[in-house]
Image 1: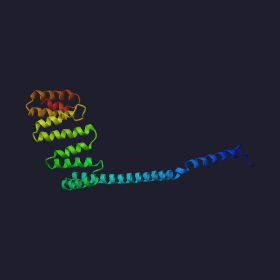
Image 2: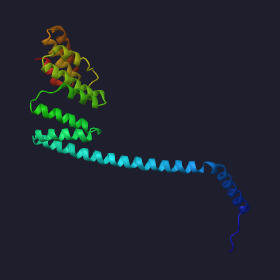
Image 3: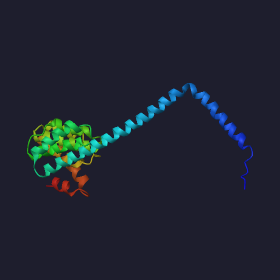
Image 4: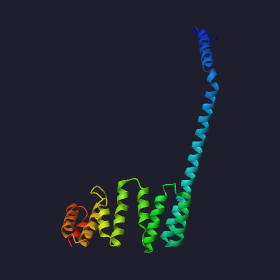
Length: 212
C-alpha cells in the first residue's frame, strides 16, 4: 500500500530549507569567528581535562609518598622520613597533602625530643582553613611558649581560643596554670572554676584535674 503524504509536507520542507538558508546567510560573515570560537572551546576543554588528569596523577603520587613517610615514622625511621618530607615539600607543595607532611615533621621532632621551631607551627596552622583546626595549632603555640617559660606570651596566645573551639577546655587548663606561674592566683582560680563547671557532666578528666 502506498503511503499517503501528509498535507503540505512539501511546503513544510521548502519552508524549513528556506529558513536554514536565510539563517546561513545571516551568520556567513561571522562563520570563521564561530568556527574559531568552537575550536577554542574544544581546545580549552581538552586542556582542562588534561590538566585535571595530570593533577590527579600528581595527587596519587603525593598520597603514596605520604604513606611511605607515615610507614617510616611508624617504624621509627625518623631520619629517612625527614628526608622524604623535605623532598615531598620540593615536589608536592601545591597539593593538600603538604598539611600532613608538616604534621609528620612536627611529630618527628617531638618523637626525637628536638626543639620545635615556632615558624613550622605557624606555617602549618596557616595551611588549614577551619577555625577548629587552627585553634589546635594555636594551643600548640601556647604550649611551646609555656615550655620556654614565656608565660605572658603563652597567656596572650591562649586568649585567642574561644569557648566554641573544640580544645577550649585543654587550652583553658594551660591558661590557668600559666596564670598561676604569673602570680595571678585569683584569675587562675576563675579559670579552674570555669573548667569544673563546663566539664562536670561531660569531661571528667578536666573536672578531676581541677579538683585535685
